Image 1: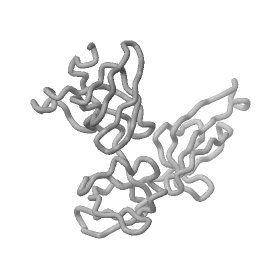
Image 2: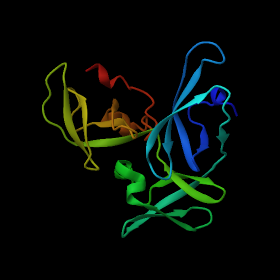
Image 3: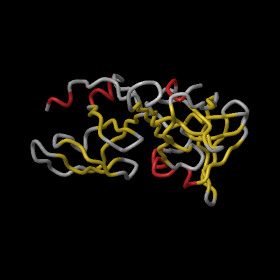
Length: 203
C-alpha cells in the first residue's frame, strides 16, 4: 500500500515492528512535494514514534485477528491471560501494558491482538466506566481531582461526586462524561462504551 493510502487505526510493519497508525497527516502540495507523516505505536514495545514517508513509498500493511481472553493472575513480572476458547495461556510483561494495566480486574474479559498465531498486544476498550470513590467539593467552572474505584486519580468537572460513576478514556485517562447512579441501577448505562449522557452533565 502507498503511504498516502494508509488510514488511522491500520496495522503496518515498520523496521520489523508491528505498529498501529495513531495519526496521519499529509503535508506539501503536488504529488512529488507531498509527504505523509505517520504517528506510530509499536504494539510490542509500547513506544510511540513519528515517521515521514513520500506519498509513493510502499508501506507493508498487516492483518491481525482478535481473541477474547480472560485476565487470570499476575506472576512475577507478567500478567497472565487465558484464551476463552482454547484455554491456552499467554503472558505479557507488566511494562508492555504500561499505565493501562490499572484497568484490568480479576476474571475480566478483554481482547488480545493476534498476528500469525502470536499474541501481540492487549486491546483495551476505548473507554471504561468506573465508580468514583473519593471526591472533594468542587468550585463551579473549574476541574478537580477525584479518585476512582481502581485507585486512579483523574481530573473531572466540579459537579462530579462520590455517588457517581464516570466514563474515561483508557488511552489518556481523560474524562468523557458522568453516569448517574440512577442510570446504572436502571440498566441504562453500558460499561466501557462512553455512549449516552443521560442528562447528568447539565448540573
